[in-house]
Image 1: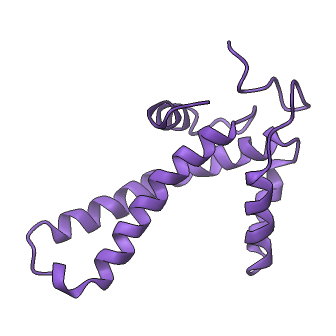
Image 2: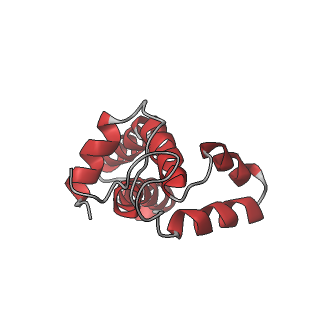
Length: 128
């Protein structure tokens, strides 16, 4: 199992790596960063009481910046996560189907990965 910092490091190092596999911990720790930034951005834009605070604009812009910076690594780790369950990375496009597609993709991303080696490589949880 990966830690939060290991996951961030791995995902940013593998920004353009669409081959291989990603464990659940690698995927979900990285998603936690994106979710936190997204919540800061959404809540910050809705919270009228914070708008007069001097750090308001900085916090909102930083959260948005992190989200934009994480777009390509998030795409890559999602494709590698699909590979971990022995599915094609092209299944990420299923999320384009309104509502049901995103739910199906979420269910696939929650599944435990293939034990041992599959057609996309060795088990990412095995010690190197």
